[in-house]
Image (cartoon, rainbow, N blue to C red; front, top):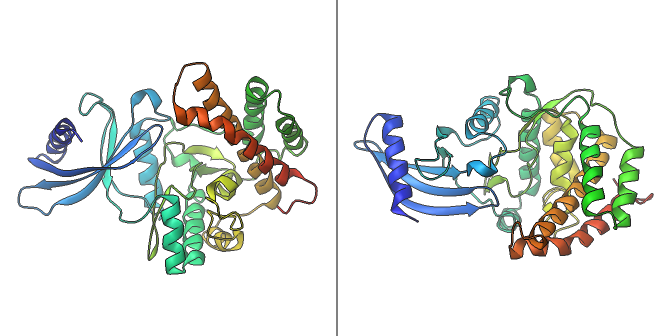
Length: 334
C-alpha cells in the first residue's frame, strides 16, 4: 500500500470535511477485474476515527460513472435496501490515480466460501436467504425512473434485446459449439415478451456481492451494473445459477438456500415471481456467462489481455454447456 494513496485520501477528505483529516491503517479488502476495495481509518482531530472503504474504479473500465453508482446506491438505501452509506465521491483520477467512492465500512464476510462456512456454523441459511430476497424485493419496488437518467436502461423489450446480442456473440465466439446453438433456439422459441412491470435492477446480486455476518445480511455491494427498466426476473434468476453455488449444487440460491426461502423474502417485500420468466432468464444468464468466458479466453489468445486467468476461462465453457443441457432438457426441474 503506497503512502501516495493515504496522502491522496487524506487530502481529499480534508477538502470534503473542511477540516484536517488523517488516514491510517490502509489494507486491501478485495480486488476484482475492474475495481479495488481498500479499507482505512480516517480521523478529524477531536473526533472518533471512522472505519471507511474506498472503492477505486479505473475510468477506462467504468460501466457507469462513480457519481451515478453512488446515486443509485443512496437511492436504494433510502428505500430500505441495506447498502453501505456513501461518504464522498471523487471523479477526478488525479487525486489517487483513479476515480473512487468512499463508503462506511460494513463488517462481515463477502468471500463466497467463507460466507458458506459462516452460514453453516450459524445454522441461519433460511434467515439469510429471506433477508437477501427482501433486499431484492425492496430494490424492485423502487420506481426505476427515480434513478439517474444516465444509468443504462434495459430497453422496451429487455429479453429480446439481450437475446439478439447473445446470438451475435455466440456466432462470433462459439459458432462451432452445438449446445450453444441448441440453447439459442430454446430461448428464441420461448422469448417471454416485455415484462408486465419493469424495475431498477442490480444485475449481480449474488453470493459474493452480499455482506453476511452472524446476524444475517448486512449489506449489498457492487452496484456498477445497475440498470433501469429491466425485467425483475433477470435479477431473481441470476443468483440461482450454478456457478454462484460454489460447489453446493443442491442449494439453488448461493449454495446455501432453497428457492422458497429466497422467495419468502422477495415476495414479502412486494416482489412478484413469474416461474416461466424466471426459467428463461436462468437459461439466458447461463448462456451469457458462457459467452463471457469464451470472450476472456479469446482475449488471451489474440494477445489483447495476456493473463493466465483469462486463458483458464476457456476450459469452463464445457461446464456451461453441461449446465445449459441440464436446464433445457424436457424433464428438467425449473
